[in-house]
Image (cartoon, rainbow, N blue to C red; front, side, top):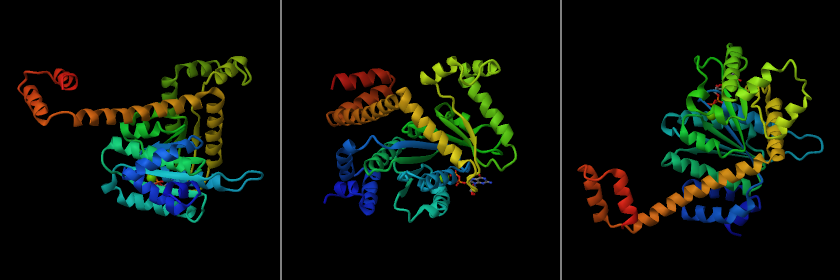
Length: 338
Ligand SMILES: Nc1nc2c(ncn2[C@@H]2O[C@H](COP(=O)(O)OP(=O)(O)O)[C@@H](O)[C@H]2O)c(=O)[nH]1
Ligand SMILES: [Mg+2]
């Protein structure tokens, strides 16, 4: 059996080996991804993002456990966790901490946890994460949780991989809402206020509601009119049917498991909403388009670069350096005249 065949047959060791090859962007890893691709497109990709220390790993651990609990008439779904941490040298301890906190899931064959340290550029990180997620999807994991530190553009790019994005806040992390600074609030499908056992939770919730109203003014209109609208008001139903999703806010205490059933309920409701509104297909298409664009850029650049003489490039760079040639003009010459 080839490595890919073993992965498709459910071999964990083979999967682990394949994930390393993908993470290292090795030729075998790239070849395997091509073979696996027709088997992807089934998993529910759930991004969990937020500032360090808000309790993302604890929350992810609880969500995975919840999905794994046997429920009447249902086979528990298989869960994969990808923990992305692009700041490796300083957070080696935190990664170790994650491993310890996620310990209670190990030994369950329906769960696979992968911590990824930073390798190479941040753009490479997003691509490697996409590769790992595809491998899990092809291997039959129905729920794929992707934990990222909500810190910047690369993080937002990784979060965009997901069908459903949870943004995690915690009270008492300063007066600001961390997600606003990082620009990740706008991609939130579900807002989680974790550490709801801590003081200041009301302030955090009030601040989040204020931000949501600013981001989605239509919602404010609905709230102002809410005394006149019953929940079954046709106008509201029309909005829901047209793909209107109001990001709900849910409090949790991940160390105790409080609010976890509700979070999973909201994740499932969001998935139903995506499927019913056609938004699932739209997000899939947007995600695959951005992946295609990423590969096009890489390929076109390297093909162009390999056909360019070193001397030509250096003399053009010199001309830019001497202010004889504007950078944009130089680029046009290099691309169209070489
Ligand atoms: N009081 C309280 N502590 C929590 C809660 N959730 C997580 N923690 C603690 O917060 C710290 C950071 O949690 P972690 O899950 O590693 O956060 P991450 O950096 O966002 O992944 C750990 O010491 C957790 O035990 C919670 O709901 N309440
Ligand atoms: Mg963590």
